[in-house]
Image (cartoon, rainbow over all chains, first blue to last red; front, top):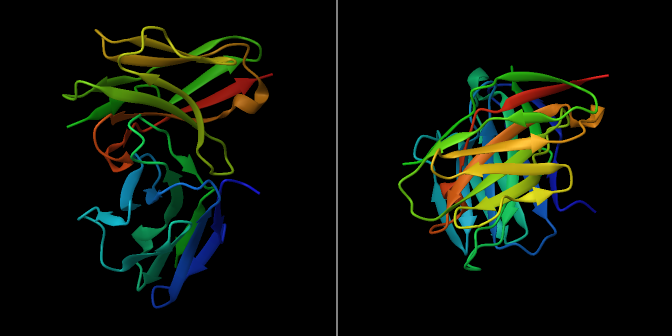
Length: 115
Length: 116
């Protein structure tokens, strides 16, 4: 069982569809993240759920909405997306509040194509 | 504000040779950590190595070592004895010790291709 699991691995959706991406972590971490990775751009942090606090990047459009029902599960709800939203969406988790710098562990990503 | 710069969009290396991937950074934080991740074509970001800004020695993890030069603000990744499976994108990242992981900054990555 891998540390961070994302489903689906690939998703093609029309601009009027509603879909959700799912992420599950089995590492006992207390923070989870959504990143967007577009070609030739640095990873863009979209949302953070850390120690029961939500932090979001103000530049993320409202057509993306996260949900974190518990510390192990994270969703990204998608609706009325645009073609420029096509990208690799990566989920990550980390353990925060330990007093030391820690790395994050990533899932394999969902390759999203908006048509 | 933090910034990570990876100036090599692509690199080639012969199998079994060593390769250095460059990373320079800029930060006003007095204490921070530097990371390298590998991203194969499958998409997963795989953590490779970590260097703390106050660590006295350069970090090593198997065939990976981090050439940390604090005064020059560089944190180059050295891969020794390259293998075909090392072909991937490599990302340098940094994070201040204070604050959560949401303060991590990633570079744009270097695509490494290992040639047989």
